[in-house]
Image (cartoon, rainbow, N blue to C red):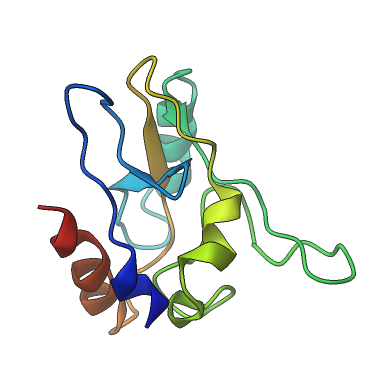
Length: 128
């Protein structure tokens, strides 16, 4: 799959951010049960200018397909399939910049999705 062909590049001395194809990718995942204050935690984290959030994706008729900024659902198949490959979902993440340390955040409700752990492993294990 396209996801396996393009693993994230880890942070280096030259660039402190984890980037793929010119976009900063998520490296912090807030996992929690529904009604466990994950929205509040994510809101607090994104108050920092160094914590980035994905943009909502738009479908062919410009309708928003992502439920909210905090839940991009990249590693499950709810809105944007992980199997579609990174070119489709990377556009929702900010452009890579090596000038200062930035962190991209994913607060999707992944706890009840059995394929997410495997998809995260496949995508991120290649960068270590």
